[in-house]
Image 1 (cartoon, rainbow, N blue to C red):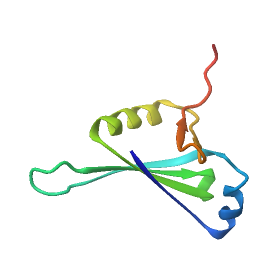
Image 2 (cartoon, one colour):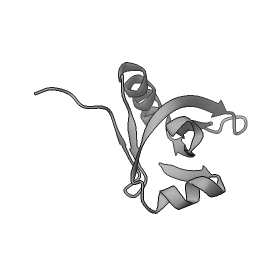
Image 3 (cartoon, one colour):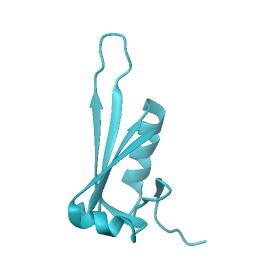
Length: 92
């Protein structure tokens, strides 16, 4: 999996202090590569209503799992420092 983070000038200041952001919107994408070649699966994660965004490039198995987890979770967070998705809090 590869990630790309983008943000505006205002969020550049927050990146140094804010380590975890809430995923407020997400969008899966698929692009064909060519005949007989595997396609590219992308997930765009919009963090804190646009304060930042992350684009994940994943394989078909990870895309299937990620789609299921994002769909089933009421709250999702993204750790900018560790590049980890946290799927909400569950009671024990």
